[in-house]
Length: 344
Image (cartoon, rainbow, N blue to C red):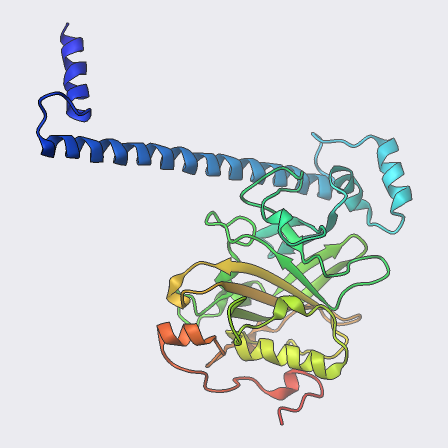
């Protein structure tokens, strides 16, 4: 009987009851609404975290399969032989991945700690892999994906390969990429230590594994005005002038500069793009973008980071200056970084 009384007291405290004052009824309705919202939010948050954990676990298995160390997932030898016959020029490490998803086009890794270490996919649009994992299952984490307009075949490679990935709060996928941004509000704008610790990356296509030297990182606005930087729409260069101007646009906007990483017409560029949600940079659609160029044949893959410095005045977009103040003070790099470039 005592338990029943306690239960009824709790019910009457929460649920509107006969004889309650107007104030009590309003209080209870607000309480129930808030409690319901809390439960729904909690369940939704838990669902997202469970889904993300499942994706990360799946990526770990895929990584081991790619490295040839996954003993839990095996592909029948006859199936591998069939895939190899269909793709005779493909690197052996990608064959078991293609059996899982024939839209695999590469693998991206950054740092000895491999804070980025994921399969890269490509389909006929830029939306699908924003919401699907490498198994083509729906996923809020999505996948790393190459812009559908880029070519990555045995015969042709676009001069600027653009890869998109989500900026996950957990740090997964491209969640740590914005750490290259020394203008982030939590960091000293003169601190480029993260770049110095991670000056190169590795991108393996189905046909070739290459090291790339990072040469720029930019905070840009997209899809909303004349001051947008259309880095994601340029995949090939018609001539040296177009290449030089593209690289100059990057260096103008880059928050760090390293004269040791020079650029010249004919270089292959890799562009990594992720979203930025921080309104301290303006209420507009923003991206943090990292640019790297492929190590040339016979070139030393090491980067002299002692030559790197923080760009004293990177070019931002109009909305940024409206929120943070200031203006662009002009180029903070020398023209010889781009071979044969004349600033005019």
